Image (cartoon, rainbow, N blue to C red; front, side, top):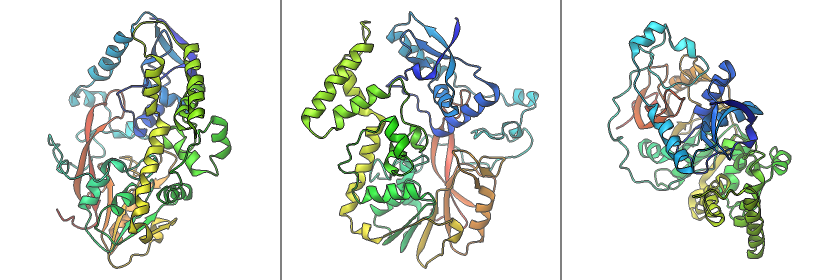
Length: 437
């Protein structure tokens, strides 16, 4: 097949792509492209819809690339494209022959800068802490889930495991969420009855403002549709714009590419505008825009079906998550919440505090995290935690310090790269003192 260069903005992600790509995977793929170049082209159909390479496209956007190599399959049908998309993601999952890797002379030092879920023990160099065997079902799978989503959309949000963490943490007078981020742990804690008071802290004042505004109901009637121009103008002053309308909630780049932002914003107007008449008018404009790009090929979604699919737009999902926080307004617990913007080393313990830290996850072999725009010294944090006379809890994958007690939170899919997709990795809750089981 012939490879050609095309504008990245002209490629259309598949709306129902079932393969999830998290920030870690995108960052790793971006590092690989930065080091070795684009060695695998993106595969598209005749209408520029991406069949294979969604993660590579996200990584290229992260790097600011304008053009990318593609292979165009002009004659593939939508049914064939869906089968190929699934098979490409599924068939590359396989085990490793460690002896062959030894013969290649590879070790963890060859992959500094990559956050890889891979056991390099026996290959020389750093040996990770040995983890528990991964059971078929996780220990905490059966606990009652209070909510499905917690906090505000923000990279690294702990929403998916907040219930488990709250279940393990001991009861006390005050829950201290020392690296609060999107506030998932604080939100979940306030819906429980384990603590009387709550301290939410994060150095990022804008994300703190977003969280506090959300729990006080500011976004209950939020109906703005943010364009690229709005985003660039407001992102440094409006936390809602900065994080809800940015790609991956990273606060830097606009949510959609230039080729699709117009039709996406029109769809949002059809769903969000204040009056029924305004929404109807936006819907008409949306159908017109669809007709301009519509293809009479069989089995394509009809315009109305496309609009229904677009109700799952990222921005609307994020707005829904913000509005869920309105429930906290009815809680007396909201009156017992304190918010700070201090360095974790400046925190002063109070009797009855239960201290939890959602620290940036250590990049094994480096002793720090310098990804996602952060520069966090993991080893320095470990020494701080061990020096505390009170109990400190924090979550992470495997870490380079084996002096902490730990309990497995969950086995999660590691979406790190093309060769490690589908592998499982343990996520743990660590503590400087024994964790009560």
